[in-house]
Length: 307
Image: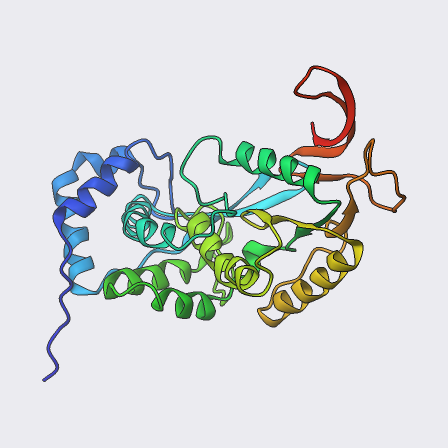
């Protein structure tokens, strides 16, 4: 008779995850709030840990809702139950230190600090002064295109903890439940609203883009904030060759460069006076273009810089 699997999961892990989740305003398909969970806290934590150690924990479907996008339209997000949100927090606590140690210094989206976005913009601005050409890359519908099987294979190369792998897989595969009650099961995509979404998305692109760039184009600096990427090149020819290779790399992994947002840009300014169809770009909400700025000595000059 096959012996039942028991995972060694300390009560401290789930208690710490609950403490980090106390202010969560999630209300999933079961209608339970964090306040409801707290009323029988000891019981809920004990029952949840028992499921986790026994290998029987399975996330509920996420509640599918739509929220407005910043630039118009609607975005679908999946709201987990309180119990599942706590497990997602626990998994993130286990995964983050291990994955963070792998990430490239030019990747900013994973960094757990307030000004990572501003840092990416600042570094991109400095490099645009040194390099005449920029490849601006946006991955089309990235969140919906992450292949679950490929992601889990990538995780297994770095994560040895079996229960972390098991429950991460079950979490990303949790179906979405629509307002009408229909269940949508997907083989691809990281649901917006999942606590692991940001970390796993960054890890996925680390393997597909960052590590590949480091191996094949070590002399090309870049900044990546989730799926928004800027690469700096010394010539138009280098930029064109790089973009062609990147498109092929993405295609091989089921990803597509956005046809409108992906482009090659000439960093035209007071000293770089050539002509090119694209001489400006948007990155992380900042406009990069030729503008009048003051240099270190206080003199006004024309430079290619972010706003």
